[in-house]
Image (cartoon, rainbow, N blue to C red; front, side, top):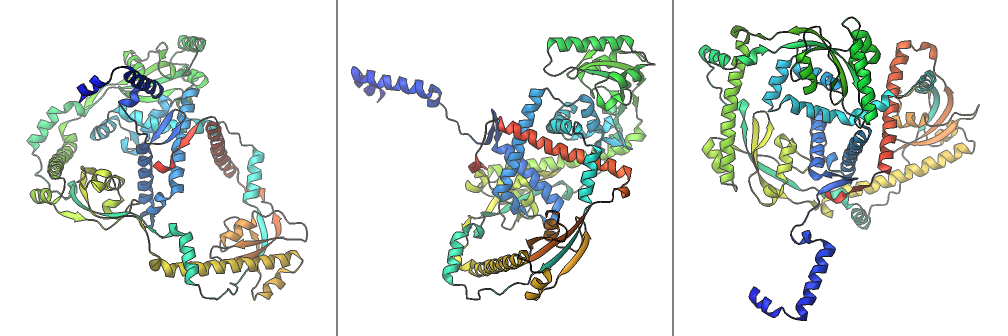
Length: 634
């Protein structure tokens, strides 16, 4: 066929067609003939993209955190609402903006701040102090190196660099604190009338009205897409324990891993940091080096702490005279490590350049490594051996389950029968999750994936936690649908009646408020609807026993003029209304506030003002950045 085409493609037709092809390639780009791109990001922030995977990971994290915090009260449907999804996406956008601002401003997490943060994690401590051996052991169990973990922690701390800097620069004066207290502890005298529900139009709700409501509010009557699952579970906790190892086995393990039980050499170190900005000019670098060399020349063990307090840019250690405590290899940066381990006890280094700037290091003391005897670590060896045996048995069974369910992707039964496991089922649940394994974000993601839901295959092995995993497949699938009118007709009738009641209550409250503003007394108005006036003098914010809607409105109303109360109508949570009269406003008694309470409040106000200023900063970044959101991809 190609030869036939070639034979016919000669003369002026071939020239015309060739010209069209060349034009198309030059206009659209030749690469479009060979490759296509499917954009799947949910937002674009300047040149940075937020992928669907990043968005779903954040949604899953928040969903799981809310589930753990709220327990039985957890409402997973909140995470299916467009407003929730948009709020989460906006949070990710703000983080992208702050990341870019960090880079532009040269802001990085200080090494000392990173070290302090990790040292404060309870899981890495023994007897309330950071333990390097525990640190390395726990990371090793997770398949991480200290460098990998430090990178993760640094990434988690970077978004707070600018907010923390803004908060630290926030100034709260004594007048600010006094003004806040005066507002917070202000007292107000009020009178109010809770209005009874007026008579409503008691005409029956017609089917035509019900259908009109149904057509206008169909989104209220949606049954979400649902699935139920079959699954096979492997749980290390349910597996039969192996026989404990003998002392001979433990001693062999001790000899093989003796290096692990040696406390590494540690060094007691102080330092002085001269900061060098990330995007420093050559002149700034020279100035920082000159300053560091001058300090190194002047420094002695006797005056080092004083110099650190005066000149160090490491805020975490300067108050302690530059003291970094006992360090071992691998805890600090490679350049710092190298210089620290070349020093002799009592020596002070020349300036050492790192990512943060120049360090002047004083080696105050050295603690040699000491091996722990077998008897001291026998319990630890036994625990590790038993854990290793359980892990091997679990991994072997989980591996076989993976292989068997992959070999027969259309059923879980053969794998379950061969491995002696049970095929379990879940009730129907939506994308918002359900009980049991359906609450796990990874299970949700797999259950509604194309491979499992549309193609009908078994899932890959899903890790639910340490030593706990499942393989799932869809048992039943119910597509999303609008509930039929007949199924929700009774609910609609009640909603229409509720709308009538709400409209009647609002109409009554408007009329009664108009009477008050014309000069009728609150008592007379209350009597006309068979209600009574209630008085609450000296109420404060968060007043117990007072409907929250009344309290909120009472503190939003302006100060009344002498002898003339401020008036308002207030919608209450149950759909009824109240009339409110504000008679008096009295300031706080400042003499009763203790100095320590003032300082605590000053710190809280600085944090709150800093958060507000941070939002303003982010809004400025937003106004200068092209941001595109793809709501249809959420």
